[in-house]
Image (tube, rainbow, N blue to C red; front, side, top):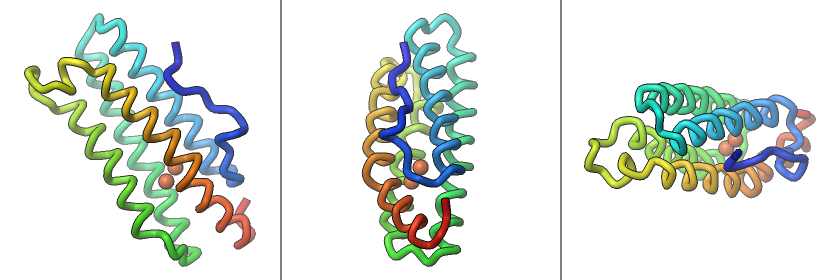
Length: 136
Ligand SMILES: [Fe+2]
Ligand SMILES: [Fe+2]
């Protein structure tokens, strides 16, 4: 079962950002499925690594766009991104005794909730600003 599903309410009005969000959501769902079945910890670990890597790519896209268009809220926006990355990295590197490692489901619930709130508030604000600058 997907933990988060993309629909039009998540659109920020910028094609490239939407496309990257769809892919990131897809990756979170795949890692979540692997965490739920927990058949193979190595598979889960790889899926988390891929997801963190892609999140980093996506955050760079937004960071570059913010820089390019002199977005006034860039610093605060980037701080939110580092929050996500820190949590996601912990999930991949935690010791077996660590609470996050013992219950990876919790991590994905956190990450999915984070992404949902971040897209609906922070990224939508950025999208509206970029639209005003003529970026679609
Ligand atoms: Fe963002
Ligand atoms: Fe985003």
